[in-house]
Structure formats: C-alpha cells, structure tokens
Picture 1: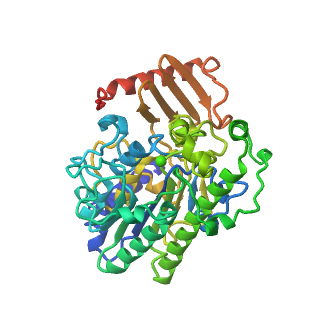
Picture 2: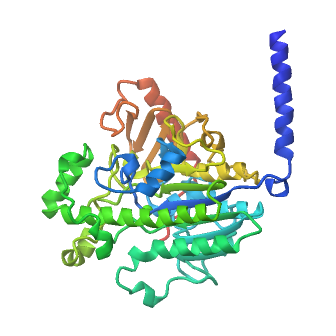
Picture 3: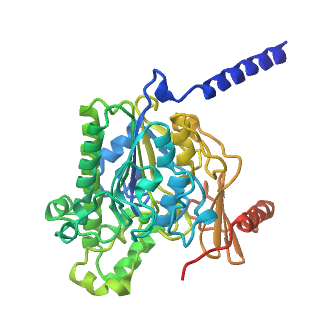
Length: 466
Ligand SMILES: [Ca+2]
C-alpha cells in the first residue's frame, strides 16, 4: 500500500503545484509581492569584507545584511570582467552565446528588468551600466524595460546622467554612491502603487580610488602586516611591495573606499526600515568580478600614480582564491553573494553546497515573483536555495569570455581548457587551484575535457569588432 499512497500523495502535490503555477501573477492576488534591490559592487573581491574575513576592512552594515540573510559560499559571476558579467545577470545567458564583442546586451532578448516590468514592477537602474556603448544610437536602459535611470558608462537616452561639471568635481567618484542611494530612495518614495525593482550598480571598488580626507580618517593608523594575509594573496602583496616599495597608502585608501560604500548602504537599509519596507524587500549584495589586477594599466597611468599613489584598486582581496579580475580561476569569478529578505529568509543561513552563477539571477527572481521565465536560459531557478534548501545542479556551469580559455565548475570540480592544456582541481580540498589533478583522476578529467569541448563547439563564432 505504501507505494500507492506515496504515488497518490505525489499526484496530489503535482496537481497542487500545477494550480499554484497557473495562478495569475502574485500582483493580482492578495499576497504582496516583494520589492527587490540588487546591489552590485564593481571589482570588489570575495575577501574584501569583514564577513568574508578581511583583516582590516570595516563593513558593519554589509556584514549585518549577510548575517541577517543567507550567504552563498559558492557563488560565481558568469564572466571575469564587468560588461559580460553584467550582461549575464541581466540576460540569464552565458555571454559567449550572444555577445558581440562582449560589450552589448542583445536588446531583442528578454532582460531581467523587462521580465519584472512585464510582471507589474516599477523598475530603475542607478550607477554603472556598461551594457552598451555611448553612442546615441545604442540601446538605452529604457529599451530594456527600465522606467527610470541615472547611469554611467552607457547611453542614458532621455534620462539624466552626470554633468561634466559634476564629473570634474574633486572626489567625484567617491561621492557617487551617496547620490545613487538618494535617487533610489526618491524612486521608492514615488512608487506607492507597485512593487519596485532597483539595480543599484555602485562604483566602488573599481579604479581609480581617491578617498576624501574624512573617508581616509578611519584607516589613518592602519599598519599592514603582510602575514595577516594567507597565500596566494600574501605572495601577491609581497610582489606589490617589491615593485612599489609600500603597500600602506594603497591599503588605507582601498579600505576607506569599501567602508564608504558600507556607510552609504547602511543608510539605505536604515531608510527601508524607517519606511517599514525592510521586511518584504529582497536586498541582494554581490560584485561583478574579482578584485582588480595587481598592476592595472601600469604604463598608462604610472605618471598619475606617482602623483597620487592611492589611485589604483590593486590591493583588493580575492580571499583564498587564485588570481584576480580577468582570470577564469576562482579569484576572477568567485564573489560574495548575500540575500536579505526577512519575510522569507531565515537569518544566519550559510549555504555551502549550492553552486550559484550570475546567469541564475533572472530565472530565480522571475520564479520568486511568479513572472514569466524566458525559455532557453543557461541559468536555472535557485529560489529554493535562496529560501534555505540547498540545490544540486544537473550539470556544470561554464565560462568562456576570453579567446582560447574555457572553464567549468561541477560539484567540487573545476576544470580549465586553455589552448590545448587541460587542468583539473578539487575546490573542496584546494580552493586556490594549486594542484592539477588531471593525471590522478583520468576518468573525471576525460569527462570534463569532453564537456568543455562540446560546450565550446556549441558557441557561435566570435564576432569581434575591429
Ligand atoms: Ca568590474
């Protein structure tokens, strides 16, 4: 009898599931759909926060956001640098599938903001854009279903952007988050009749870093001890000291930049609380890729750097991971990823199992708000994991945003195919990808080599603009 009862129970669950799935959008029902704010930092490394183990940086507000919500310890962006990473978040597809010159988000594809707008959300984007060029003929945020925007790095269309005078103000970049938070709060206050979705794509910690005197004051007495960092980061910072003589000024500036971001985000969280909105607002915090390269654009800005040695963001922390931005090793793509939603997510949750990718954001949010999920996405719905139940993926996640270098992650395995060279790592035992295990596990290596070749063959030919 038991199997029969079990089958009947499964059928009942299946029918109920169908009924739930066929219900009209939450927006037409009695339940109030959640508001959503997606905070995306720029070049902030996995290890750049107090909650992820930085020895000096003070980030009490971001730490609280993480500790009151869920932290994903195996979260990745789907590319190792800004533009394709952001396109994957907005489009749910691996950038290699459709990117033309890895700079444009295909406007004919459904985007995260369009999907949410179609589901009844008021949508806004404040901060970096980097999803299309600066020409007036390039698509603007409005072409992706964004009601209101104030952007940098793109065609703003009819919407306001920074004026030349504002951009030339001293410490302009250090003050951008304050403005973006103000704009977000103003948008929230004007959006009474609909739930809101806001992309808050902030500037820190991308170069150049030039904190104000007030921002720097927090770290004026900081003395860096290289031994406070573990390898491979320790080796990188020793290299930095060997090349540049001193890491103190750069580290103080970097920490000040992160703390200034934290202060502004604290103001945002407090404002949500004051408005009684914090309970049913999903606040997501992440970064678009790993920390900036150790010696970014050195030749080009060496002269400027000599004048102001704080300008580069090259002392960010990748935590225990190998390499930094641009690399397909974990240091380039493994990011902090926190979701805060008191109404539905139990505080203090840490997910050590689910492998989460940037391409999952669109299908996950679409599912949570019961919007129509576009077909043929690379990303999958991880809403169960967001709500506390770890999920196993059916297969690997992939990267290929550099010619001649593909990588995948599947369970504990990370595999790279660089030219003809194949490497295999066990991230559970070796998070810094230091020991190639391809000869020790020939069967696993063969399987992933074939998977990478097959995936590469499925990609369209690169269309790189001259
Ligand atoms: Ca970036």
